[in-house]
Length: 198
Image 1 (cartoon, rainbow, N blue to C red):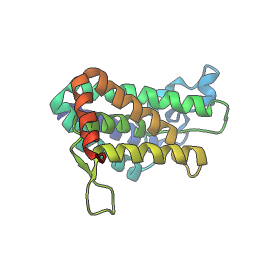
Image 2 (cartoon, rainbow, N blue to C red; image 1 turned 135 degrees about the vertical axis):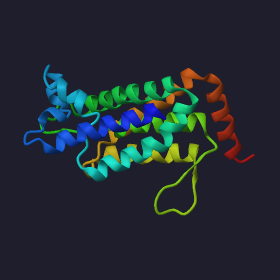
Image 3 (cartoon, helix red, strand yellow; image 1 turned 45 degrees about the vertical axis):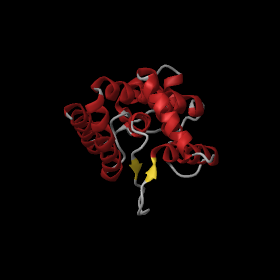
Image 4 (cartoon, rainbow, N blue to C red; image 1 turned 45 degrees about the horizontal axis):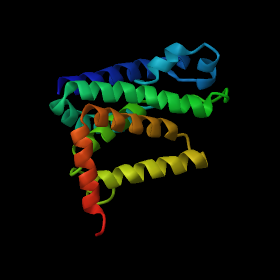
């Protein structure tokens, strides 16, 4: 569980520094700037900085519970799903917002989504709780609802949440797990088929 805790510690430290900065631009990802050869520091730091303690807690809470499962299975899968999902989240965000000078984003949500979806692939029988529902949602159903909801919200452009990052990170995390273990992908599909009628 050391890698999971290390990732959480990095997020905590970078967020602490970010929240104390009077000029935090270097901790924000501006796709418009990156498209013009600037803002690369923010591209990196934004993957670990968060808008506030609530934002940090929610992401790290999720990372702790799903990251430790992946780490027990394979530390390399955890690291690959986390960092490649970060790249996927950035790419999806860049494609959508590269012509918007005022758009900025931050947070590890894309990376955490990648870890979550990798965990769902390897452990499709696990139930996932969503407050305030009192019963767990099967992992594959949660994944479907998560992606559908994120795509809808991304198209509707409501709120300040970077839904493109969630989608990009989730898809990359799932693909990392599937490529790492085709057998796990087969098991995931068999689990999905078990939920289907007939």
